Image (cartoon, rainbow, N blue to C red; front, side, top):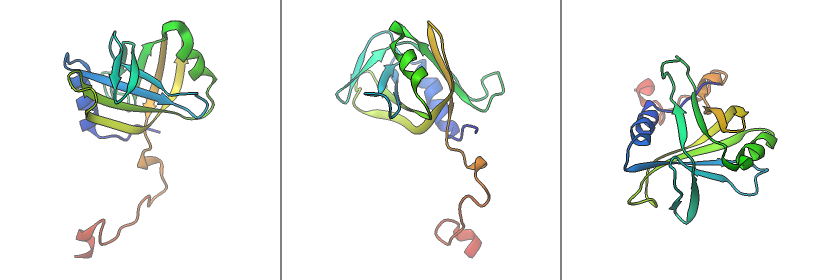
Length: 157
């Protein structure tokens, strides 16, 4: 399944991930986890909306970044090996949510995107990496949605 998110989201992540003013927060969750894994793309921890995000530098490969791939990828350090072991044992879909915040106002989200899943997860002694996929309509049987006067008024004019 290919990633079906807006180009605007990935542009925002690309610009803000390299900014000194903004932090990319990631929440990785699965029903078997005792609590979600919260990571900030930084070397120091960050508290946002009462939750502590562990500072682990992460790398992102956005869709089309030189490789021609239609999926995105995230890679973060497997510090202490805990998260890698937890993710390795998870069966089924692992969800990931991205949230971009300013360091000066970490409780206010600039941009967020949920509904994404991790696939093809690879865990090594130093890194956890995975493809990020969304629920794309291209994999749905046609018609995935039905036309109606409210949804497509031009067809009923």
